[in-house]
Structures are given as C-alpha cells and as structure tokens.
Amino acid sequence: MDNASLPELAQHAELVRDRVRHVAADIRALLSEDLPRFVERELKRGFVENPEFAARLSDERLAELKAECIAEGERGRDRVLMSLEDEALWFPATLPPVENRATIASNTALWAAVSGIAESVHALRQRFGYPTLPAGDVSVEYRPPTWFIGRRYLPTLTEKYWRLLAELEELHSRAGAIRKESSKAELTRRWEGP
Image (cartoon, rainbow, N blue to C red):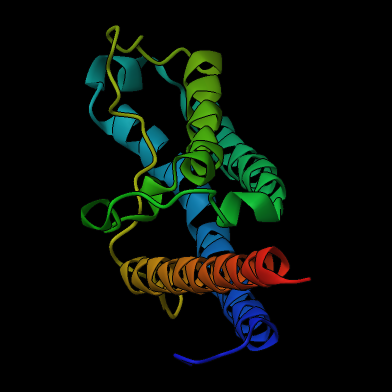
C-alpha cells in the first residue's frame, strides 16, 4: 500500500477499525466473565486474611455476603460493560509510547472505566463491616488478568489491539502526508498559473 490513494487508505483504515472493534468485543466478553469473579475473589481474600472479622460473621451473614458478591459483581460488570460501549474509549487520540503498550491499562481512559469494578468491592466491604483498608492501600484494584478466561487470553488480545491501533495511526499519517502534498501541488499550480 505504499502508493495507495486516499480512498484506498480510507478503505483500509475502516477495515482496521473493524478489526479493532472485533478485538474490543473479545475483550468485553473476557471482562464480562472475569469482573464478577473479581468481586468474589476480593471479598473472599478479605474474609480469609482477616480471621477476627471472619469469626464475627455468622453463617447466615456469610451466606448473605456470598449472594451479594454474585449480585453486586453482576451489577458492577454491567456498569463497566455499558461504559465500554463508548467506541471513543477504544480509539485514543494519541497512543502511548511503544514500551508502554504491554497492557490494556495503558489506555488510561478505557482502564479507568474497567477499574471502576473496584467500587463494587469497596461497597460490599463497607456494607458487611470488613476492616477498613489503610489510607493509600490499593490492594483492591482490578488488574488485567494474565490467565485464560474462557477461550480468551488478554495479553494476546492486548498485543493485537495495540498493533492494530499503531497500523491505524500509520494509515492516518500516510493519508495526512498525501493531503499535504496534494495541497502543496495545488497551491504551486495556482501560484504558477495565469
């Protein structure tokens, strides 16, 4: 595509955007499975790591907590997935440096929406009387999963996502260069004209 015309570049860019949309759909599907599990994992971890708190929780209250983990995990997941429907999040105006593209969290606007799932954990911790986390403690933070979820693997999807965005950026750059050269040629013709 070295000598591609503007329409050809635009067509290719649209194909790349479609591929990004497909990767985004796969990432959303992966998150759809993992986000509710994150809520449960974190509340279980907080339960197991705090024996005094766990001893005070009756079996009935524990059963209620487990049911709320499922319900709140699903609500939190739905909130996150709804915000991820905003296509603009998937197409940042500027890409991070190449060395920062190892994780999907490098898309800060996108990851801010995803990491909102931690609010569900904090809400349940507070509602059920978990010990207060020390100020500045970020131990309850959703991090990009590095294991297979379903048949999807986020590190591979992330690599594909950044590669496609870099390709799209290159296509836009080439189209801009063609437009600039075309404008220069037109202005030169006009200057040298009658």
